[in-house]
Image (cartoon, rainbow, N blue to C red; front, side, top):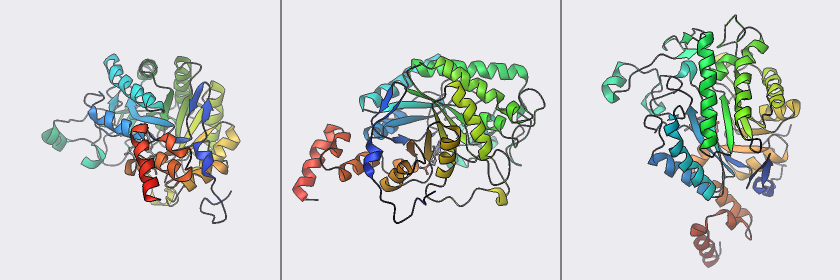
Length: 386
Ligand SMILES: Cc1cc2nc3c(=O)[nH]c(=O)nc-3n(C[C@H](O)[C@H](O)[C@H](O)COP(=O)(O)O)c2cc1C
């Protein structure tokens, strides 16, 4: 495996701007806006915040724009500000986002999520801990009871979730089904099931979260049963001509819990269900320091993506501390991933794709810019001669 930093590796930026097709969906390039929760919804509804946020990211030139994790039911929110897809009334606002993204030339994706035992939380900038009395006093945002495969708290200072009964499991499957239908009705091109970061689906998969002794726990096959069932529902609901993604935590950490071989086995099952792409993240549980993942360096999750792509035999999306066009292009060239997702770099500079395209390809790169910007900027560059 080539080190992403290897000085001898020459990046060919063309690969980043090649269209990419999955089923009947053509994306204009291989750059993806990673799902990023902004915790700015009101009662789950899209607000003006989301319109400007998603709009500037789509205008910036990415091929696929994710709308943030959206909760399948009230209990499955992370915070009071989570975007929702638990009622039909949410569809109109989401449709506004898909229309906007399409009009700006990108494909749209939504991540369907349930927080599990990490629900009932403060927003990151409010502390990110479990909601309590101070949150009621400050913002009238009280806690709610969370649920999980087993009655095991996320951390010592977090409340113990309710272990889900078989009835609760049946209900959550139906909540996911209704959410997938609403996502389809809102016009999204891609639907992603969130199975990462310690949230409900991940905590069913991992032995660190799942100590059940019934059919939904025990060995790996038992722990995969509910996520696979729900992935199957997603594929059943989602139109045949459009792709479905699953986001995984490729590993929980070093030497504990869910490991890469588990993700590969899970990905093979997902492939058999017709899932089109594995979005390869990692982590999400509180672990002792010695089990935490290696230092987070550029492209640190790409080796997971590469292994899953090769061994499970389906396309992958690579993500995590990728900051330059060269790094992204080399990851694609080296076969580490089929799509490259960026999160924080696009918060810093939403115009990252179109800026790199224009700098790289003098003749055609400008086409990625909306003409309202590109017409002027191209002329400014010619006037300044740089
Ligand atoms: C503000 C913010 C919100 C995020 N929200 C989500 C989310 O809703 N769902 C998810 O799977 N990951 C979420 N993530 C993780 C990102 O999708 C991405 O995997 C991570 O930031 C690593 O990529 P980066 O180094 O390019 O930022 C979030 C990250 C950030 C910075």
